[in-house]
Length: 318
Image (cartoon, rainbow, N blue to C red; front, side, top):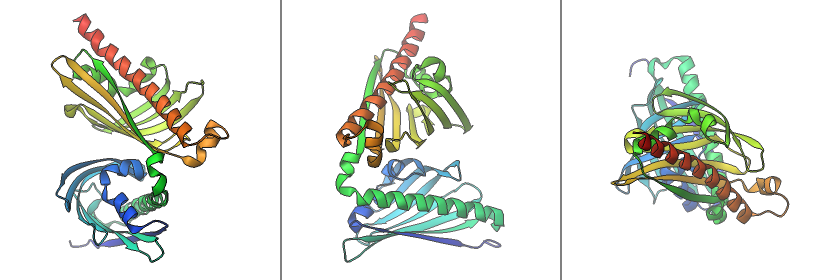
């Protein structure tokens, strides 16, 4: 492309874990929102065991960006190539490679390469993209290193669960309640403040002050991606409470002939080093898992029950 040149970046990190463990983390992109800080949501559209097509949402310099990504996985070579389709401006093209090299002492080297071009190759646009690539790559590699080096405890550090409420009413009314999160401070007793913006339709950025069972408050920041036709809202906390390294979730509506089952799903990576500071001396992972399960479950169930009341009350008024 005349006037446009290819810019290249390279980022690497040594990992005190086997290469197979590291490759397993980068190969499962659907889990990236939980494991990699910049990633908000990933939808796998196609996968034949080698070729993969993904729809991705991620933060870039504080903005939510979305694109289609084509990936080619090579488990034997521990290499994954990728190319973005129709990236958002100012990007013209973006491609790259993940590689994991085995070292003889049971450690590995993880490398992430990017090649990109920018429309018009304006210096300020190139600098914006390079800043986003550098910041995101550093955050992703550091998170992957920490997770891989704790791989023998990862099953205990990751907590996933769901709560379900049955609603005798239309899914549209339930979805409307969940979608209009800006109204929650007036409706949910545990929400003191909620600021919400939706500059891109269906992509909501929100900051919320929540009150805990002991009366204290904590502030979280989240991105939500809304799929009204599918009855789904996925969310990723970009600022988490002290006990969590990461928190993702989903509201999903499953309608049938008599009503709708509303499911709230959560996945969390616990921050192990904060357990005793938050829960007191002697607290361990078992205590942290119980505490987080109860706290998140209590709030999400309260939200589900109010969504139920909203939908069923509207039906009774008709």
